[in-house]
Length: 351
Image 1 (cartoon, rainbow, N blue to C red):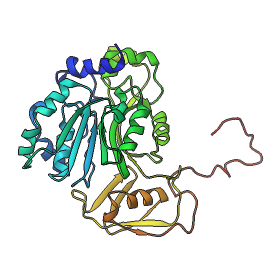
Image 2 (spheres, rainbow, N blue to C red; image 1 turned 180 degrees about the horizontal axis):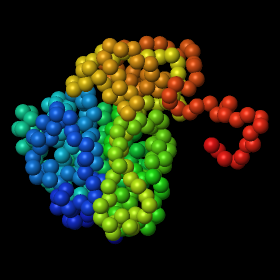
Image 3 (cartoon, one colour; image 1 turned 120 degrees about the horizontal axis):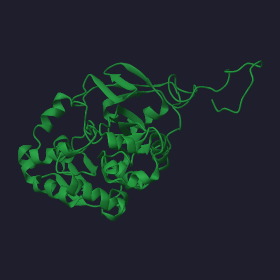
Image 4 (cartoon, rainbow, N blue to C red; image 1 turned 120 degrees about the vertical axis):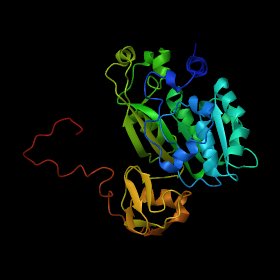
């Protein structure tokens, strides 16, 4: 049985609901904000019962947008996103598990009525997210792509990122949650159906993820949030060894030629407000909490991402590219010089 068949069996046959999970890796431990909780409470119970995500993949400013959900499962996130994009937006969900897609498809009309739409704005497609080019989706056609605890289940992870970038519009965003390990895991673990199905054995070493994302063209990955994962099952924990795991949410933008470090050009932005559920403060990532009306210095990459994405109308942009002041304070890499004196010996260490 190959990995794809193993995953389809685990999520189509072995798991009947989220109560069957043996770890909290495929569970969303963070409480949703009240506005999102209201939408989640409107989701059909059968759809919610088969939810196996690890994060909250509901980025802001989605009204009227076209969104793709990679590994949509029973459709819980896709239906939440359908409410956020509104009747004039659209959501496409892709998954390889027929049993999950059957549940999602059966509830399209129910959710359209629940949200007051004349017709469903959600479409579900069976397919492998590592072979997105074979599904027939139009290139450069999505404003936002999301994924919730699924990329770890795919063998060819680079193909997922490359495929996602090809489907995104210029300035589009890949916003996703997944599981990461603190080290590279033994290859034979991928043949353990429980360790793999529980989103652990296929988890990327976090530094390998960063390199893969950059090689796929997402040059400045932004961490939004993270949490440690508990493995309570003693036998599973023994098989995983000393490795530790985190669930993390990242946002990647299809903005070309971003710099490898946070460079300072003396630029700043002013958030004008207007984004639903974030009118006073816009949380862009774990390091950018931008208050409305306040001049907020940013690096060149943040300046470009905000100005070339769907967030541009909500900001004023100050400065240009005429002067460079080095690494942005508090970001990137500090100068390697000045850390030793002539009396100090220099070893072969890179630190």
